[in-house]
Image 1: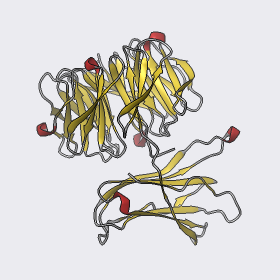
Image 2: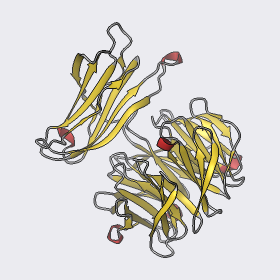
Image 3: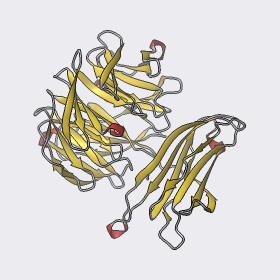
Image 4: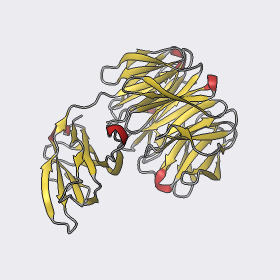
Length: 423
């Protein structure tokens, strides 16, 4: 999976560029997928920097000779410091060339340069172990545990990462708080008090805030990621809020109410609830497609509800095997498939998101208490917790077969993977 990275480019000097255009060209005989990102790096105190993407696109590049073998961002307005990162994956992943063209304010070309390939940053998988009060850290390529991070108290329940992978958030029910760790050193940065019974933590795709579901006081706490402080008062939800999924293009978040047979809608700009979507049974896990058009909700015990995010209306539900005990759902980076864990059946079910049907032939046996699921950024692997068997199963998503079983701590539940689109 080659990564092309320009590194930070200083655009503050005389003759600075006003616009940049990124092009990715497939010069090979085989198709490939590319993720293209143009980002800015505003300088902060002590020389540190944080990344803020202002153009991101996922695209399928056809082989050379096809008119769809090139992706272009079009001219994008620049700030003082910016960078380009492109990731390619697939059979033709090594045949991609990446170019950047800089323009002045009158759209005249200043220069064009190639973006070199760099060594990829290792992907890390974080699995929280509720029974041993720690987090397993796993190297995704080698599928080996590299270390354990001990939490500050008992009953850790969920994990989430910032988009740049620099911070890990862990909900800790023993102290009704959230631990924040520096992933470069695995050391504690701070501990943030939240509501009662924090069961899940979910970072916005833009990295601005983290939402914490407090299952015992029917609320969501919002954390400012930059300062790791609480924003405003807790947001009231339905009964026993469990999971959150964001639709930032429409400024909303969906919160499943695991004892309320509903989803609460929150305006992400005002942090005010704006409505409720009734469901036929209690919902748990939730995920939204990369294009923000549909949200999938695990409805106990054997249904995947589908929300049209433009209207908040329910589309036809997707039936899953009776009594399977659906728990969590994750969607592939290209949005073509949803993978649903079933804790009672110990299975991972695959759903075709275009047809919105489950494909029985692609179901994978995981183990007792299959629960958390996370997919690597290239869409090739899924890591799935088997809570009652104390391991994480690795699933090859190209063949939908179970591969490695990774021993963890006690009662592994939720899981997260470091993104590698940013650094």
